[in-house]
Image (cartoon, rainbow, N blue to C red):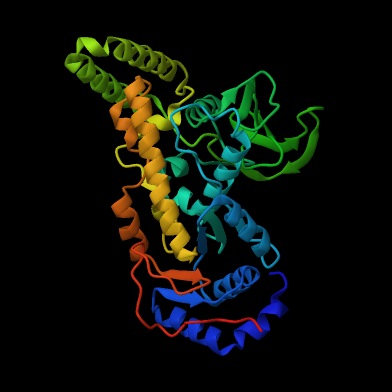
Length: 391
């Protein structure tokens, strides 16, 4: 832990002692009022030190989340920034590759329950639906020296969880397989790995340089984490394709003659996507087809089980939620009317009513400049934490 000596004045502060007691007795929600912007990371880190659980900080936008992450990084190394996953109906993959790697790295950390940590994100990230956690866990592979492995099976699994097979690995999310050698570059790693087999047994594992292809360091084990946020195998592909076809056929059966142009456009788009899905388990707008792949997509509330929630500026978060759902519905309606998407592609966000319900089930601390009441979260009239100062 960094700069821990700076926390001593706060720990001895009368108001913080009240907060600490609230944490111990689980008197939630706790409302902290009167902090300056610079004081937020200070008290969040102090709160984290008072509890055994990991902590998630939620702000009203991504810029504020990044700023809080930077500030918190002065106090601790176990702080992670989770970027939003844009919920859109067009392809953003080409411009958001680095953000996808960053999200996958944090998702891997969230799923690792061994270490206490602080996750910083925005309210928009909390409204989105995601691949069920179990999919990530079932496609996480640990390889160590001496293991008996089947590189063909591993290669198949890599393709299903988003890796691209190439001749020579040059970037994240790629792998190559030749003879008894597997090269793979997980999105959560700094360097790619080279696994060499003796028969079916892992003989050596090394990191290597993508430009020179020369080994860097010999290691004993490493983890392979999925390279895409939508994980699809043959079973998922077949079930999703049937759902998509059924919905398209229902639209065709009930279409009027005035809709011919829109229906023809939709039919061409869907059939092209189905063909690509069968060939490679993916297509440009695959993220927007999430409802067809999983019966029960999950939210970050499911991922962040047993976390303490800190909500920064509850009023602005509440206003941001209203705009998120409004903008999504406007975009969805426009794309639907143009014949670009299917009706069920509206199920990409957590239901607005469910969001408040789920948040109110959590142990929540709110940090506000002024005392605010919103419909987003239940509050006690007087919980004894009206103001905290750092002087």
